[in-house]
Image (cartoon, rainbow, N blue to C red; front, side, top):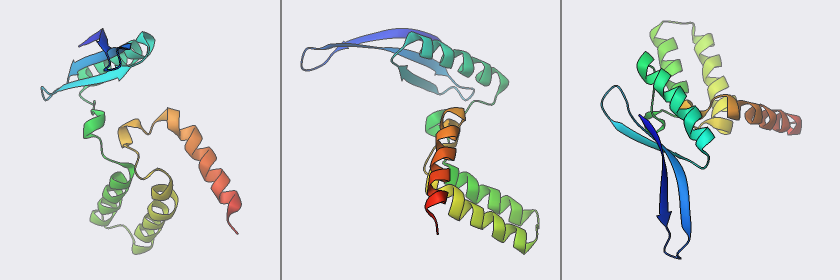
Length: 130
């Protein structure tokens, strides 16, 4: 695991730089994430380091979408033998309230930074309904 600075020259001759977090997950696969600020790269490095050691890290490229997680949740409810009405209500929640707003967002990155804006968007759209 490392944080390092990368510099390159674009075709137009402009010098660019970025901070890179380079790490290997538990399966031995290498991942690289790029940041504009060293502070952001260091913060991400700290998060990933703890998550990889705990065995709970999922790389953004391997994460499922919120829509896929919703389908999995419903399949789990069906397999557990929950009431039909409960499963129907779960499906309605997923299809009508979750997927239209954040269904394409990767579950791994749908955390705290997006939750406030998603809540605001949902509230605005709810105000426009008849």
